[in-house]
Each structure stands twice: as structure tokens, then as C-alpha cells.
Image (cartoon, rainbow, N blue to C red):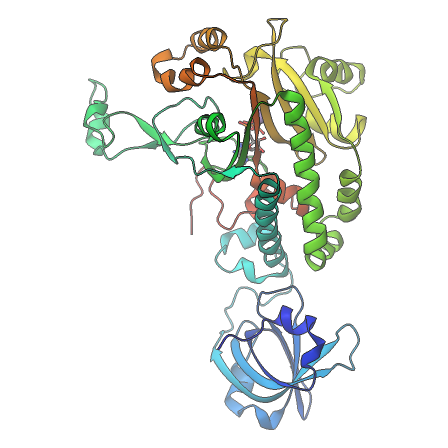
Length: 460
Ligand code: ATP
Ligand code: MN
């Protein structure tokens, strides 16, 4: 038998008066002389179901052991609640305890710091905040797939282990079965003895593989794990994160920007429509006003400016940034925040970056100095999406590969895409956890993924 969840029970007033069973964990318990009030939560939603039991229904023993965090199974009659702030409650006919929860349970207290909760990541999902994050993250996953499926993009599973250290973004984690002794040899490492017969790593992006599919199926997207040995300890970088990467044939940078903007608006709207209760929680306790902020973004049109204009804007402001601004620099998070929060007051898409700070595969502009890159920046976070129109001209791509000191032989298959039926194409990457951060208002990226991996942190 599968019982209804508390979410289902609270939504369906048609079971009022009937006998139901609920299995859940105790959030709080208090008793009067004759009655026991137990707030039960089963994780299906933020709301608790209030159980009212006469003391005679509960054994003397259970009355003591049914503490915060304990689990139980309750059968009772669902009735309308006379109490304020809740619609229904359960009048218990019988109550069986399933699991104890002794007094050293770390979640006894009402409030804990996020730092403390990171140390008990196996339990933190039982708190209101982390339960809500998990449910919103789930809704965002569905939203991502339905956005692309409605537009008839095909989902592609690109490899996690890769031999191309290609992807050109960030530091890679190596994958090897060679014994450690091999690494001490001064003669260098003989990768022909390794599992794949060559050096292999965990992927930093599915893009290059996605391009091969886009040039066959037209429009595709990936949604998979990505690994970067980021040594910086920031609130928006993880060593393992999930990335969504659409790739479209017959599309230029303008189509790419349109897609990115539509996509963000779609997923924001999906969450506001489907996770109301959790969003009200974030709006009240995590980031006041976030619901209105997100609504405003859905109804706005994103500012689109060139990198050159962004640099001019930053220079024109009389702010003294920690990293001085000049044409050619990579924008730092302080610059991204200033553009989105102070100047344009909303999302900004920046295009046409200097070629030297962007990857080899981005399409060269006529000026020979800039490439058709686009980054989508949002208030609070900075970069949430990075993408580009791809270089689709064989010779120019080959030049760029060489210019960046890469070996053209490693890219023979990637170059083939420009040799056989090349087409204009474009795509972008969205860090899924940055999206979850943006939607929930959670300030640290480690709090929006179940088990965060970052430098010197791989517990649980
Ligand atoms: P940043 O400059 O913020 O480090 P990036 O330019 O290195 O990001 P891209 O290579 O453009 O990132 O990757 C595409 C997207 O993936 C980024 O816009 C961001 O949303 C996300 N992303 C990149 N690195 C990380 C990371 N270490 N942890 C979480 N998300 C990331
Ligand atoms: Mn980027």
C-alpha cells in the first residue's frame, strides 16, 4: 500500500472524515493533561500535518521516546482544524513508533548556521531550508527538460571521461589506473600503460561532443555532471557541478541570446508557478523580495551590450574597483555585480569579448580582436551562463587551435565538423547550481547541491 503524502493530504479536502494513515517524522511534540499534539513532516512539502492524540492512544513508553526527529506511523481521522494557520488535522486512532531519535540528535534546535549544517550534510535535508532547496532543485530539473523538449531539442548524454583536454575551460581531474609509483619516475609517465592507453580526465564541459550531435540532429542539449579542479574557494564555484548545454545548428549569436533569455524566464516562471510554498519560505527567510525580483526578470527584457561598452560603463563610473578596469581584462565578479545591480538593474548579456580571454572555438569577429562570445550576468551572482557562436570556418578554427598552443591532431574529429557540411551554430552552458542559487537566494553554492565537492572537501 502506498499512502498519500502529507502534501497530497493537505491538498485534498475530499478525504475529510475518512480514515487515513500517515508515516513521517516528528518535528515538534507538546502535550497537555489529556492530549498530545504532534507536528509531522514527511518531506513532501514544507507544511507539517498536525496530529492530535488522546493520551490513551499512545503507550506510556512511546510518549517518552517520540521526540523531535523520531519516526512514526499514525492512523486517524482527517478533520477540519479549528486552529489558526492550518486547514486540516489528524485525530489519531492509533500510533506506532518506527524509529527513536535520542537526545544527541543535532537538529533539536530550531535554527542552525549553514556552516554547521554543511558538517551534517546527511541530515540537513530534514530542515525547512534544505528540504525547500531539494524540492526547488527537483522542479528546476523538470523545467529544464520541459523547456527544451517543448522546443524539440534532443537530450544527449555526453561522456564523463574524456581524453581531450580540449574543452579549454578550467583545470581537469585526471582519471587513471596507473599505480602511484609510476608517478615518481623521473622518466615521465608512460600513459600507454594506463587504462585508456593515453591520458584521460573528467569532463569540464559536454560542449564539443554536443556539437557533433547538433551537426546531425539539429538541436540538442546536455544536462550532466561536470568537474573542474577549481582551487578558488568562492561561493559560486564547485569542483563537481551540473551543467546544461544546448547546442543549435543554423543559429547565430542573436538566436543564442534569445534562447538563453527565453530559457531563464521559462524556468523562473515554472518555479514560481509550481513551488509556491517553498518560494514563500525563501522570500521570507532567505532573501526578502526574491519573488518580486524574479517576477520582474520574467517581465523584463535583458540588456544586451558589448564587452567594449561594458568596459566603458565601468570606467565611466567613479568606483574604485579592487581589480582595475581596462580593455582586455576578464570581468571579475565585482564588475559583473556592478553592471547588473547598479547600472542596468537586472540581467545583462555581454557579447564580443577579446579573443585572448575566451576559448579557441568561439567565432572570430571581422575586427580580428573580438569573438562572438556571450555571457549572461545576473544580480547577486554575476555570470550564470557562458556561451558563443562557434567558429564554423575550417581554416580559422585551425589557426585558433594553433594560436592557443593546442595540438590540431587532438581535434581532428572536431575539425571534421567544419570539413563536412559546416553550418553556423551556437550554444551555451548554464551552471545548474548557479541557477538554483539565483532562484532560491541561497548565498553559498555549497548549500544548493546535496553533497558539495570543493578543494579539501569531499566528505559524505
Ligand atoms: P566563472 O568565470 O564564473 O568561473 P567560467 O567562465 O569558467 O565561469 P564557463 O566555462 O563559461 O564558466 O561555464 C559555463 C557555466 O558553468 C558558467 O556560466 C557557470 O554558470 C557554470 N560554472 C562554471 N564553473 C563552475 C563551477 N566551478 N561551479 C559551478 N558552476 C560553474
Ligand atoms: Mn564563462
